Image (cartoon, rainbow, N blue to C red; front, side):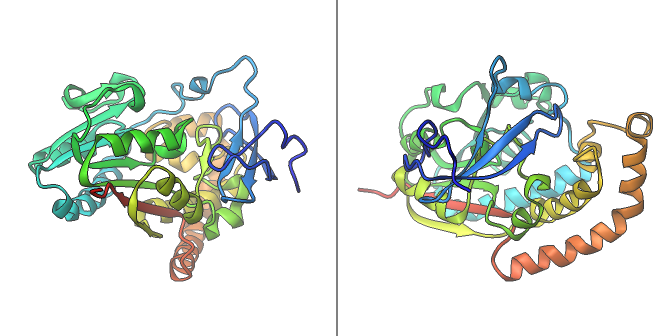
Length: 320
């Protein structure tokens, strides 16, 4: 279905007005409705936010930030550390910037491994772990004023889909990268099997905080427009990919979305769930094992056919 208001809404990546109206999705916290469009030219999907008197920052309130359970945090962090540690050939000075570093766990782990690691973040300082705040610049990355050619590696773990100007972020990242430096961005894959199956119930959709929804094609175009070269796109992520399947299955069954996710991130506890979402709590408990089994099957299937829920893009700032 073509967007009837395409004359007022253009793709920010390729400026095309050929936008397809896909579906309506609701913010799982506020329940506010949003429309998801997809550009027919570059394949970038866009969350149309009719905010009126609201600002997008209003959707990053107390109900959004949480702290992952220790085991989950440790597994995710270990996978990321191992992935970036393999990039030492691009990082002679072991300098790293984590854009949208969250609580700083990954950044601090890299510092323990000898890297000169820093971060940027817009979340409140109370969200950060231990002394991580000492190495984090608060605020918009594009306004952080890092010197040119400062870092060997820049990482963006599930942050690029949140920013209003992803191309501007990548152009700034290229500026502060050293020659031969590497930019790594991990993002949800809007062309994944789980995204197509679950649509508005897809866990990784997360409107309106995810302003953009990337595919392998659109993220490749974005990297190219930013002047990055030797682009590699991998379609795999064990933790985020599998969890996306599991929580999406549960979302189909529940009125209250992302209930298990909120529990894993310590946003809600069993007592709160029993008091406020008793029916959905029982549904999640009863169907958890069937959903788990179905998630294993779906995750393996989408991995085999190359349509996994998460993609990792790597591009280099080549020497001219």
